[in-house]
Amino acid sequence: MNEIWIITKRELKSFFDSLSAYILITVFLGLTGFFTWLYGSDIFFIGQATLQPFFSIAYWTLFFFIPALTMKMIAEEKKSGTMELLLTKPVSDFQVILGKFFAVVLLVVVALALSLPYYITIWAIGPIDHAAVWLGYFGMILMSMTFISIGIFASSITNNQIVAFLLSLFIGVFFLIIFNVLASSFTGNMGLFFNYLSLSTHFESISRGVIDSKDLIYFLSITFLGLFLAQQILSKRNIAE
Amino acid sequence: MGILVENLTKKYGTQRAVNNISFEVKTGEIVGFLGPNGAGKTTTMKIITCFMAPTDGDVKVNGLSIHENQNEIKKKIGYLPESNPLYYEMPMLEYLEYAARLHGVPTSKVQERVMAMVRKTGLNAEKHKNIGELSKGYKQRVGLAQAMIHDPEILILDEPTTGLDPNQIVEIRKLIRELGREKTVILSTHILPEVEATSDRILIINDGKIVADGTAATLRKQAQGEEILRVQVTEATNSDEIYNGISKLDSVSMVDPVPETPNTFIINSKDSLSSRKSIFNLCVKNNWVLTEMTPLETKLEDIFRDLTTN
Image 1 (cartoon, chains in turn yellow, orange):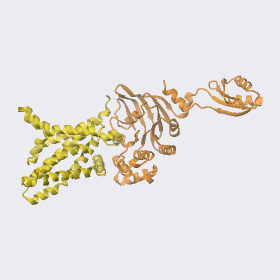
Image 2 (tube, helix red, strand yellow; image 1 turned 120 degrees about the horizontal axis):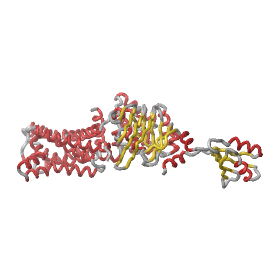
Image 3 (tube, helix red, strand yellow; image 1 turned 90 degrees about the vertical axis):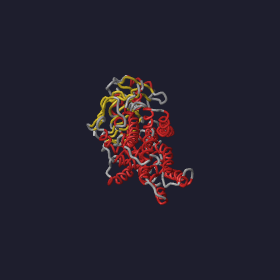
Image 4 (cartoon, helix red, strand yellow; image 1 turned 90 degrees about the horizontal axis):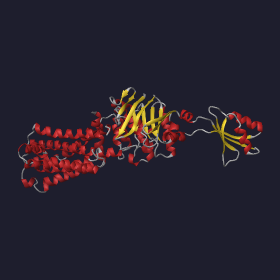
């Protein structure tokens, strides 16, 4: 446990040292703020005290940002050889993966926490559904965890950061759009199956204010699967080919 | 802290990088791994440090198997990988702290250990820089410092002196010698004088197999069956006379004049016989002035070349 936290701290610090954390937070708050307050179907346009516009923009922003954060995590360490050094310290492969995973989760949590003033401002403007807001944030974190684990998985299969970035976007698009489209073009069990796989279905049901164990299991199992596969790929060096 | 390697094999595809190697390293020994590029030195080290599992065989570190007690073994080993990978964007002190914490150095002792290593490796003047800003020699020292940060009982150093200037090489070798007094050290290199300067014992690996094992002196003795002398005589009437004189000695098997320098000969003795005394007596008898008599040792380079070329 301690080892995971040591790795998480180093990764987090490297985000802040390399400016990528500041860029992420600034652009995240800027983009979401712009569309929440100023442009398109913003708060004043829809005339309701709700954070829905914020969540729908944050959803897409994180979709693009998370792969940018995760792409180097394993790919670069494998390429530069620091992975060898790390894994000959008394830590297991899975501890390394978890350490990196939590670092990105924490960074996303920080970015989301900094958007709380939006919530407070809207609260001051009109009556707001607090449960929906908190569940919206909760859903954002669950969705981010899913994308982070996909990103780390993508980073583990290649030594090339760009490949890792594109691959995690590619996998992400399936969960975000393609399964949804397939769900509406199939009927019966196939339709239900793709509907279950579609991330937006689950995100919407949570942000509507209902926590269903079905949704929780969905997010957590994809997260775990991504991390598990990343660990398997990392451990492949042990197997004779 | 002994290391026992038993029938170790590692295959990459169909290629056997390490082929059924067995050897033992005793506590406090400094063992030099010698071998041409691609001989299997690095692979063996990667297996001992628990980075990779072997295809077959076992390594026991102080009785603990790499198949079962990886974490215990990793705690006892300090490792400097071949290319000395480091996080270049990290400040050096922070990196050493990170390594110390990962190795489970108690929080109260972390600073103390980091500073001790900084002093030991002579990094004090550079301590506030990022690793990426350090020169290659200093990076190498950071690599050594992180390997020793938790005061491990075993140090595994993969080509610790590559890319250093001659002064730094001497310093690092001195450091390794010093460390070897208390610790078990395995180091790999393909620089021959380096093993001689640092190691108690030499293991020569070729094509994934151990082809020689022993101290530099025993390896020499093995390779060198007979005594070879270089002899120079002056104030003699002519070199033919000397040539004939020496050739007639009982213990001499072959005499070879050195072409450029007059009156100089390379003399091979017969097996297990020494001709030094009789050559001296011969010179005294004939009133020749003996100006040089040097025993020629077989060079480690020659042994290496013999063993590693087919």
